[in-house]
Length: 138
Image: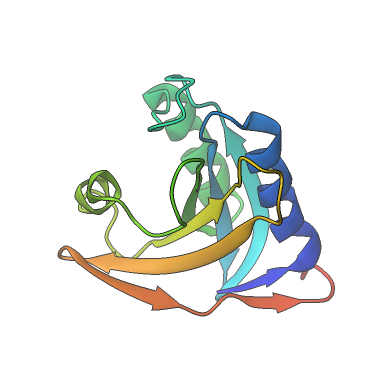
């Protein structure tokens, strides 16, 4: 996936703002390039997991598809571990085949967050490159 620096910064800012709880959201993609970030509410308000309201997710997915884009990325933050998919993430990914999983590692000490992205297919985790471009594509 290709993503503009401003969109990636929006995701990182979301993770920092929601710390110490995990954040979550989705990224709309068109032709392999991110075009919009949709922040979602973690209704668990938990530092250990995230959960979203199903109606909110359906509304956002309808909006993305209505614009001619597609769901390309699910993102969330890890506040107590490295940005690598947990067993919970791997299990949840079974419901979202073909979607990238972008994870922001937010550090308790306020250090620089780290961002990594993965494909999770049939329980197999494969890291994928994040192609950050200087300006957002429109």
